[in-house]
Structure formats: C-alpha cells, structure tokens
Image (cartoon, rainbow over all chains, first blue to last red; front, side, top):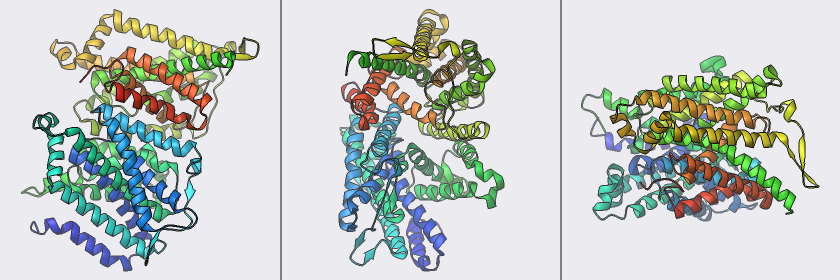
Amino acid sequence: MRRLDPFLPLLCAVALALLAPVLSPYVSDFVVKVMILSIFALSLELLVGMTGLVSLGHAAFYGIGAYATVLASGTEGGSIALLLPLAMGSAAAYALFVGALSLRTRGVYFIMVTLAFAQMAYFVFHDTKVGGGSDGIYMYVRPTLGAIDMENRGVQFYVVLAALVACYGLLALVRRSRFGAALAGIRVNEQRMRAAGFAVYGYKLAAFVLAGALAGLAGFLLAARDGVVNPELLAWHNSGEVLLMIILGGLGHLRGAIIGAVAFTLLKELLSTHGFVGPLADHWQLTLGIAIIAFVALLPKGIIGIAARLSPKGST
Amino acid sequence: MDIGTFLVQCLNAVQYGLLLFLVASGLTLIFGIMGVINLAHGSFYMLGAYMAFALSPLFGDQFIVMLVAGVVLAAIFGYLLEWAFFSYLYQRDHLQQVLMTYGLILVFEEVRSLLMGNDVHGVKPPPWLEGSFALGSLMSYPWYRLFASAACIVLAVALYLVVNRTRLGMMIRAGASNRDMVRGLGIDIRKLYRIVFAAGVALAALAGMIAAPMSSVYPGMGASVLIICFVVVVIGGIGSIPGALVASLLVGFVDTFGKVLFAELSGMGVYVLMAIVLIWRPEGLMGRKT
C-alpha cells in the first residue's frame, strides 16, 4: 500500500475519468463543483501551506477570474484559448498589485491587508455597473474550443478534471523545484533565507501571483459551469471557507487541499440537508460554526493528521 | 460644494471616524496585547446595535442609562467569552485564530437570527435628541449626530486617561509594547487579558448602540465594520491607540468625502488610502518598525 501512495492522486483521477459516464447528473454536478473548489483550495495551499503566508483575501482572485470570463465572452461567447488566459491573467494582475503591497507587511497585518484588498475588489463589482452591480451578470454562451464545448455537461466534467490534474501536477513540480524549496525555506525561517542571500520578497510575490492565477483558473471554470457570476464570489466568506478547506484537509500536503474541499463541501451539504439533521438544517450556520471551531481546536493537522496518527509508521 | 455642505460633511466625517475609533481601539488593543486576530470583533458592534434595538423600548427617555446598562452587559459578556473561548486562542497560530473566530461569527450570526430575526430594524433616537438645528441659512444638522460625536469624544478622552494615567493603563501599555516582559515582571497577565478583552467588547458594543439610531440595525452589519476597522488598524499601527484615533478620523474623512465627490467608486477610497500608507509606512502611521 505504501508503495502505491505517490500514485494515489493519479489513480483517483483515472477512476473519476472512468466513472464519469455512469454518474447520475446530480452526483456528476456535485463532483464538478468539488473539483473546481479543489483547484481553488490548491491555489491557496501554495500560499498558506507551502510559503506560510496566510491570506484571507483569496476569493478576490477567484471572483476576478470568473468575472473576466463572463465579461469577455459578451453576447457571442468566446474561445477557451482566449478566455482562459484572460481570466488567469486578470487574476494574476490583481494578485501582483495586492501582493506587491501586502507583502510589505507580515503576520496579522498581512491577513488584514489581504482581506481589505479583497473587499475593495468586492466593492468594485458590487457598487459599480462594471459587472451588473449586486445582481451580477449572466453568460449568454459558454466558452468553446473546437470540439470542446463547455455547454455539454460531459465535456465540462473532463475539462474540469483535466484542469485539476494539471494544477495538481504543476504544484507538485513546484514543490520539488528549487523555487519550491526556497518557498519552504521562507516558511520555516525567513530571516535565515534572507541571510543566505535569497530575494525573499521576490519569491513570495511570485508565489502570490501564481496562486492568484490558479485561483483565476478556478474562477474561469466556475463561470463556465454556472454561466453566471455575482459579487458574492469575492465576498470574504469565500476566502474564509477556502482557508478552512486546506486546514481541514491538512496543511502542507497537496492532497490535503483536495480532501479538505471534499470534506468541507460534504459537511456543508450534510448540515443544511433536512434528511440528515432534521430541523437543525435551517440553522446550518450555527452547526457549521460550531463544527469549524471544534475541528480547528481538536484537529489542527486536519484529516490527513488523523490518518497519520492511525497508521503505526506514520505516513506523509 | 458650498460652505454649509462642507461643514455638514466635516461633522459627518468626524462623527463616523470617532465611531470607528471606538471599535478599532478595542481591536488594536486585543491585537497588540494578546496577539489575537479576532474576526468576531465586528459581531460585538452588531451585538451593541441589537441591544439598543431591544433595550430602547424598556428605557424610553433614559438613553444614557440604557447605554450604561448595555456597556455593563457587554463587558460581562466579553469577560465570560474571554474565559470560555478566547483564552484558548493565545497559544495557537494566526491561521487557527482566524478560522476559530470565523466559526464564532457564524455562530453569532445564527444566534442573532434566532433571537431577533433577519429583518432590518430602525431605532429611534431618544425624544430629547430628536430634530435638528440650523447650520447656516440652508443646512441643518441632527442633534443626535452631534450627541454621538460628543459621546465618542468623552469616551476617547476617558480612554486616554485610563491608558495614560492609571496603573491599569500602564500595564496595558507595557503589554502592548512587550508582552513577555510584562509576564516576566509577575503581573497577572491572564487577568489583564480578561479586562482588556471585556473593555474591547464593551467599546465595540457601545459604538453599536450609539450607531443604531443613525444607521439601521441589520444582519451582517458587523462584517462591514470589521473590515473597515482592519483598515484603520493597519493604517494606525497595531497596538497604538493614538494611531487608531488618527487613522479613524482619516478613514472617516476619506469615506465621507469620497461618497460626496465620487459616488460610485466611494467604496474604494479607504482602500486606496490604505495602499498609500502601506507604500509609505508599512508598519502603520504610529506603529513600531518590526
């Protein structure tokens, strides 16, 4: 089993690809939603888990990616080849702005500044007519690329799955690269990295922009799936939830982000379904809030932490 | 903009800024002394506003008595909350503090919805503060807003005196500048934490009570105040009460005049201000270099 471990994510992806045609529309839709959130969570894992930067404004990049997609597709629709780079590019551009300023601070300040700049983006979409104000805007035609048409649910599933695999693969490569090693060094001891001659600010900014671009990718997929965007995508609740996903799964592991996305979405679904919790479902915020506090208090290492504790040798 | 409008807007800006100061001063002290990032601080503001809504029919004319009663209740609540919840957060890292206080917000919001419903409510100012007075020939200004500013100034002065002239204040200042040293000097830091936290909750709730007759009382009102207060704390510098005062007034002016001059983009003004401060002095106007 342990020898299989490194291939587990790939096996899961293959299994999903094979299962896709037999899943019911409800389950398939749910899986697509979770996969998009997984990409979003992975992008934040690059910041929080790999670099040690706690950002509480990550939803801004997700929302900007989604808005860019819908705004640029206009009434005619657009090509994925154009919209995808645009979505990731706009998210990365805003990440460059926010990162350049917020990385001048650290710790508690960094958390507050990222939150505040995300809120600024929220207000731009909420208060101005750029994106239809508080109601948001609809996408008339979903993006296409040759035979790939996001209008088709089956195609959507495979596109999102491919994006998730690509994102996971990219981050796995980053972790092994010199760049990733530098980020890990910054997380563990920034002072020492600076003393060793690393341009710490540049590394952190690069990580911030890359994370923003990947969140933009998640935003693009979300817009292509839902066909509608509204300012709530950028709201700080989203930033809080995605942060929760990565800690719920287990910080410092790429698969933790995905496990967390699955677990959190299931938990939220469970707590707001009458079939499971009866009348409490109407007050899911209460139960979710208590669940969050309990999880963070009791399982600071996340779900992966439980697995590591259970297995006698301890796994990664 | 004629002079009358200008004056009215100045008064509004000062009043808004002072109100923010009440919330932000507690927030900045809790950061500065306990090192806890508290996302739920906005909920205490909401608590105050809902208290004003619930208590004002009981007290009627006796608005000041109501404020005092509310402050006492809020301080007790804060004291208990620190004992039951926040005292467990000090040893945890910022990420866990963020998430646990985020969970707390959800709990508070839902409890609020269970107790008070999700409607928007109005709170009437007390009868003796209704109406407005003339300002120049065309403009008028509500008495209640003037009262709000005056009350905030009184509180700010009281806060200044407590922090700068009393033994407790000395411990608070010492705690904000070097937590470990205070602990080392044998001061009962747990008691100090509890007092500071209760005071922070009381100040935020008081701001909420004072604000209630001016802005309506509505779900989610805590979140918007919280984020603006983060901006204030970042601009002013963590742990600095004078910094919080200067930053609150700056934010009050930028926000108020932003609304007058650039209607649509007004929401952005304070964030642009924050960006400028971050470029110029990343540690905040009155913060210490780290």
